[in-house]
Length: 313
Image 1 (spheres, rainbow, N blue to C red):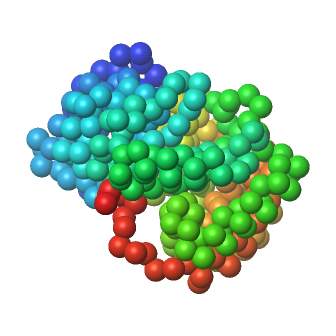
Image 2: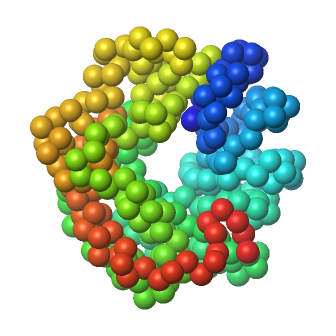
């Protein structure tokens, strides 16, 4: 579950008064705090999360995605005390992460994003080595792929020509993981687990970011098609009212309801990809390539050595 707000200075009072009891009633055990940049709204997050604690409600997983530029010692102390799992998503246009603070987090992974101008991971792997050398701590990289959504940076959309360069590199990363490269293993392991869990031909296909598995709301309890946008046209309803917006739901299901998707053997895993994407055909082709790589890599992946992506050594 993710919370976002359109307000510059979000007021968490409605969430605490109305949404928090709903979360407890539904016994929701996984929550994610998003932004924009969540550290901008840290005071609201503190109030919300402390309210959960005061109410005696605990979570199996609490995630927060941040670019890390605003991290302070106070943030680190609170994240570690609450057991937050921080996803550090780097965006150079917003500055450099506060590495001295980031590297003190107990639970953290480095999120790297493939896109049109970033098709290979060599520099990321080097950065992981450099950080480990400097701070004498393990880092845990994870790879993602850019979605060509309305909020994506201009010019980052992947093309079919990009796949000609990108796919061979993904195979190289898979081979390296099979041969024991630790960072490459970390980059693939989560994807293998998700692929093994969700690949179930014949099962009902639910959209990637909409269903019982993911409920994206703002501080007022309005529900959206995904956490990437809180624009009114993507509001599907509220968490209290089963009535949904037909227009928004048509957008959410725009790919999974097509004949091509319904008959695809990997549809329960890729789930139609992002419904906001402008490059669905490229996304679809990429998913088919990744499926082949994961099918090859899964039985060759060495056993986990006891390290956890959620906990520094």
